[in-house]
Image (cartoon, rainbow, N blue to C red; front, side, top):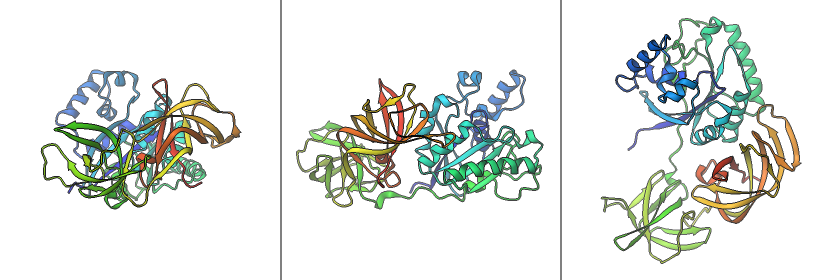
Length: 412
């Protein structure tokens, strides 16, 4: 059985110390590859600097030169309790699409705030996205306490500022921790520099969080990725996003609503394979000669997802040009892809100030959040985001560029 693991994302304003925090976590848990810290020391010495933990994540010379993390990266470390997957989400506003992609995979989050600068535009925007994605296990880390002489008064000031904003977007942080990622204060070990703080460190706080539940017992959801023809077999391949698929199981292919029975579960060099469970990529054959194509979703007979040609959603707009009513785009949800149009903007929200900027608006602007309705050219299979994230979120594309990310709203 695979060891328990938890995925968490680190978000916040650019230069508030995300990469340094990751580097320190890896260093203090002895999770760095052999020789990596020596390599970083040489780089820093050549630049006339002291050891910079941010370089642990910044492998690319371009990133070192620009001092900006430019992609969403995953890395790993272990504690006695479990394995962790860190999703490093960029803070610079131009990389919001990467941040949304990263955060959508996370079960928990660390929101990092600079003790000198306090809550900034990207702090607010990233916190809003965490809320939009339904991430409710949140640690607020107030970093660079060494730059404010480890003063408790400064920590309390930033803490109050953060709590006031987070309350407005219905986020209640599990912990608020004063740290110096660079010096190692309250990351893995407690801080002698802040005797006034006697609560959990970042690492011990993470260990209290719950991992994503195993959805093997949930209703089956397997989006079709492709069809392979091997040795006269027509193998339907995909990833099990919820539930279990096995030989003899009665299944329905949505949105076509065609039924069949699984005759085999296929795995390369494993003829004894009889079933595939949650998070496994697999192949299956079926009894009937149905037309099956990429984008269809294999389900069990009960608790079916929704099939619709109209979608209500919360949309985070990232396009440089405004998105206007009746404008066309391509929607991608799971392996599904089709054209759609913006039918209605019920409400617009400024993701930094939370100001409602327009009801029943004509267009949505860069970095605004909209409560919108999309009209779809063909039927889409969707599910509640918290039940099946892959069928509960989507992106919009135009001219091969991602211009928006969204969460499907099935409550209304």
